[in-house]
Length: 186
Image (cartoon, rainbow, N blue to C red; front, side, top):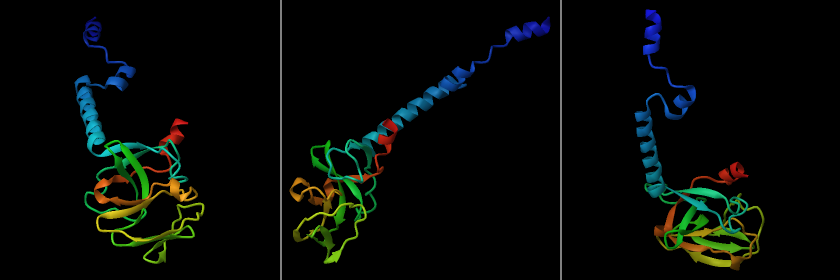
């Protein structure tokens, strides 16, 4: 009889579903949720910016309507490098271009028969899949500027937004490529 009374006096353990959803200690679960929400908010506001590709200029590396993320801290301790795909502030805060850096400050960039020449030497560009017929005379990139262009060189030159971008307009480096989330969403 005493065993029955002690069994009735003890609280029933929470169910498995409740434990999985809320945890064993709901107060600590609430604290963890608040910390997680604050961390996501701060990361979104100051570190990571989502960017959606619009237009074909970065094909085939980045397909249209793909979601990627810009790491705003990528160039805090180092300068952008040739080959980096970056987000460039184009107009206002929200309008950005996604382009590849091909020319660094002080270098001379030219296009001849669709090939890029840096300081007179052919640039190896494995990300460019189809040749183009661009003819752009050599330009020397001033200090604090970078030469950027899209990967889709099959497009007509006049349809591309390309050229020099100042360092202060480069927001950060693209973190994810090949539309990681596009495969999940389709």
